[in-house]
Length: 272
Image (cartoon, rainbow, N blue to C red; front, side):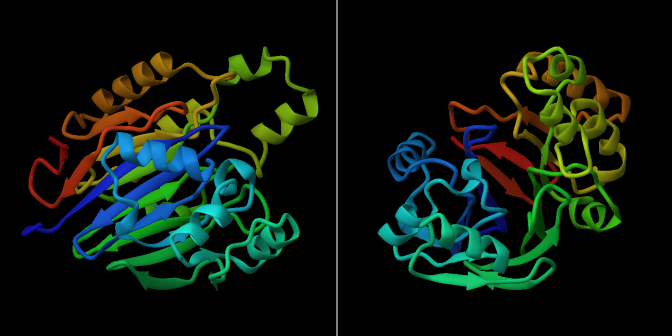
């Protein structure tokens, strides 16, 4: 890799499992490990991600759709898991803590695999965090579980070359679902999830001159619709005159293509 570029793949994203693979010339990171070791490896193989390049794993929070494979996968490849103290405590209680652990407080910054990592707190559950990754001049913002977006979150996600953000539910589909009323209220609340309209409304603030890739994550299969969300996002980008920003709705059951994120004018390419 002569020029500054980063490869990014979603191994899957949704209520049943989340994992992202980010690679630079200096190494790779696995962000969340919400699938079994076997499934993580299968999905890496499908999208051309080499686990031997991994330098470490980052964990947003301890919910099983983000942490299911943390212990087994990290121990298999002797990877350190970076997580908050509360998350580490919960993983230990669930016997899902890898041998090598690096604790950080929400808001901490650290370097791993050539990436400068900035964590920031999210209003979802105890010690849930998002990440901003920097590699040279490139920035990737990741926030998959959040009930609301404050100025701290906006600051970390604004004008990233690639933005991974939650668009969990369609409000009408959620309210008409068979889910318990208290669960619906939690999803809609401060510690819940972002809906399609909330996420679409944020794009005008978050997408800047450098933004070239938008990935909509943690989409509910029960309370959302991939095609409907894609149509909403396409319309919103057209309103913003951002046809230069590519987008994709991430799927639960299959990995994404492998994106090449660069600082060139076109910004994002599909991996050949």
